[in-house]
Image (cartoon, rainbow over all chains, first blue to last red; front, side, top):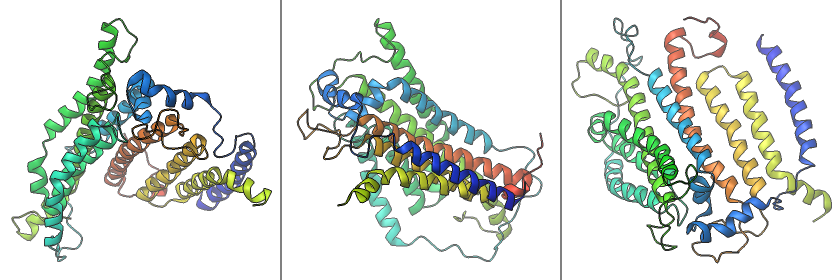
Length: 264
Length: 122
């Protein structure tokens, strides 16, 4: 199908979609008139039933924990898929490495301001990531958000250093193990509740005092496991993408006779 | 405020969601570059955020965090927030998977234009 025909087909079907959508909107309760009892029920029960003050995290890791397990494995599968696609393959590039198209382009050195700000941010980011993971049951946060914050630490180091510095603070094996432990641990946490004679992923750890960090039972445990998985998975992804770029760069550096690897 | 305007405002998030969905889809259909196509897919996905938040919103309600407000205060639906949260993280990794596919397509077929990717090879 050519370009014009495709666009024409799209415009017709897009208009059709819009008509049906607006027609469908008339059956919805309007904005701000939430109809369902489910959300209200969870809001009023979270603190009593789970000793967690953040209803969103309670939904994620407890009430709908099984759904989050599935979502976590989507994440796991796509990280594995990206890794598989970006692996070093025998048949590409070995004989004829492509060169950088702008050989005489000078890579500007990292400015001191970025170095200083970046390095000053490294530790606060780690602490903030751990805080976000461990306080997910109390205030907005949890494993997903905290994991992403933790994974941004190596990126900051890359920004204010170079790939070598990034390579030193990350370990491919370690981040893969972290990811696997996080993903597998979530599933195992569910199995432990079966061993206690409860349903899969039922809260089996003592709930503790509402408002404490060590409260709300398995919500905290699963939050930490999810944090490990997200942080590990993102670092695995970064390493895979960086390696992909470095194949081009190495060829470039050799042809220019430079020793230190330049950044893209 | 008159009736028509309030009716329009009532539907605004859902209309913006529809607009984002359609405009992202338009980008996908007419895309000439795989990276552009992936970004358009992200635009399509952002429409789900608006839709979910719009469904869960309650007038005058607080965020569903009871750390500093008493239990029983009207709060918005936490389920839609939880859905959105996982949605964002999963979206980021799925985007990485798609970008990896784009890199492979560039290597295998020598092009990132979807028009040029007609040949299937094993």
